[in-house]
Structures are given as C-alpha cells and as structure tokens.
Amino acid sequence: KYEKTMGLRRASFYDMVTINSRYSCSCPNSLACKNGGYTNPANCSQCVCPEGFGGTLCTGSPNNNIQLTAENYWKGYWISFGYNNKVLTTNYYMAYLIVNAPADKTIEVRVTDMTDFTCAYGCNYNGVEMKVMGDPRVTNPVFCCKDDVGVLNTVYSSKQNPLPIVLHQRYGSSRVSINYRYVDTPLSSNRKTTNGYDNYQYYA
Image 1: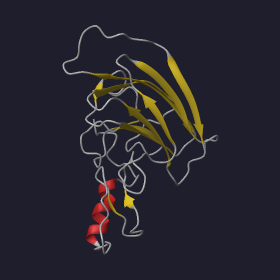
Image 2: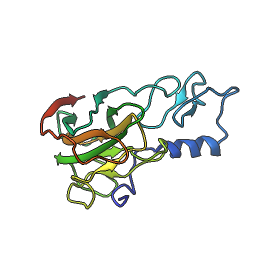
Image 3: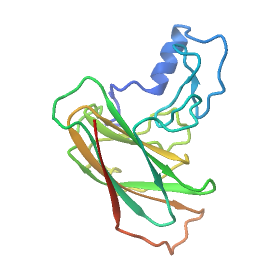
C-alpha cells in the first residue's frame, strides 16, 4: 500500500522530528502538546502538530478544514481541491476533511472515486491520505492512482476519532469522493445505506 507513497517530497512529521533532534533544536520548557505533537523549537509558545491537527497544543483542526459528521449509515461527500490553473507549483496546497463520530464508535471510510489525479510514484502532484492508523504522527499510505489495489471502494477502519483525511495538491485541481460512517463492534448486518452526496469546491 506504500508503493506510491515512497518518494513523497512533502516533509513528514518524523522528518521534522529527526532534523530537530539531530541538530538539538529545543525549547527551555516543553508544552503539553497532544496528539503526538511537540514544542516548536522555532516558536516555543506553540506545538508542531502532525498532519490533520492544529491549534496551540494540537487539540484542534488545521486551517483549510471541512468538518464532517458520521452517522451509523454510509454518507457521501465529494470535494474539488487545488488551483484554478494547471501549473506545477513548488509548494504543497493542503486541505483537510475531518470526520467526527461519537467517542465510543469506530469510523469507517472508503474512497469511491478520484478524478484528475496524476498517477505517479511519490504522489508528488496530488494525493489523498486517510489517517486511519492509531499513531497520528505516522504517514499513512497516500493515494493518487485509483486503479491500484486497495484504493477505490476498500473500507478502512480508523483507529482515530476524529479521523483526518489529508489532501495535497501541486498541479491544478483534483476531485475525490468518499463514503464514511461509524460502526459498533461487532458490525451489525442491518445498516441503512444512502447514495446521497454533499459536495464542496475548494480552491486557492
């Protein structure tokens, strides 16, 4: 699942941790950072947060986020994100979907469609990262090739709630559609489904 993620030029959280550790960058006092964040050695009054988290102590959401509320049946959402022109940029444009559910539930998510993505090793043009693993600091597989095994219509159970979905763009605009819901454990067999979609267009 990491085949297309390898070579991603976007700096990962652990890249920053490693560099700061190697050069002994630190603050006199540490903040009580949450969700795996750490005190920012370049600004000791705030934390460096993993992708999908924000705020002074990493207890909130990052900028450019859209909040979604899961129910106990599949809901749909699509988003267009990026730039209005197809010029390769040097900076990553970042946007976030944050899926929320009751604290005692498990969020499930699946990608149902991807349009105008550039399929390439490293996903350095555009990509979707669903942070379903338990450690928010870890980079999860980044999707940019919809024909790869495990991308479209594969259900992923998240160990995080809320669940951040990270979108990045360097070349034009892309569109991704997702389904999401929350479930109990074990999953019952009488779930209601819906094909209705909300939609949102997001441009720089």
